[in-house]
Image (cartoon, rainbow, N blue to C red; front, side, top):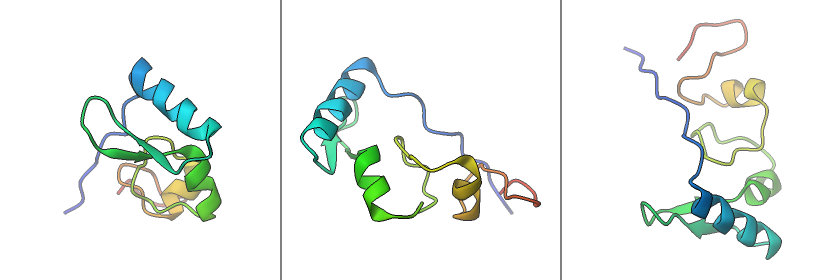
Length: 82
């Protein structure tokens, strides 16, 4: 049975500020002020060189690449939603 996971919500203004600060310092991520989770920056995800398919908040990859990587809730090119 497949399940659909909603895309990550937009970061709060404070989380976005922390993301931007981490990016400016070339850091891999930041602590989310609401959850306490470590969130990877778009820069780090881009430097990895591929989409992991986990639905990262700041994923820099196009929807087609996210679908190929198996991102939950994405539509696989030419196939059904996962």
